[in-house]
Image (spheres, one colour):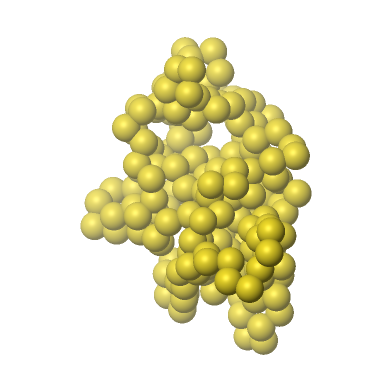
Length: 178
């Protein structure tokens, strides 16, 4: 639901900062924005609201027996899903301590669960995001309802949400949702 959502692009220039620490800066920025009166929630993502990264490669179970060949990948911060009223069906939101110092975690959409884990609970299971040697492993920490985070004129695709603070490259020029 994008009603009453403000999407702001932050251009990271580091002006005035020596040894700019994007991780600390964006955590502090998000916490400060959450204190604005009347705001419901605040979240960040790498990329435009309706232009996530389309995977033409795979998201699969660790044993590679089950694969979803096309899905959306969206690096997001804590608060992003509540900002869009995407409900959690089980598990938890990302936390600020889901960062590079901790094992990778992911949140998956219901439709991705039905493809990868049709007969079981996905929480605590691991999946591979990407192709062969470049694939990264992540633990599933939550399942959320399906939502069209891509082209709103097309059917929703399965989505894997990746923790924004777990890869420094995600922190370049983020979009902030208020």
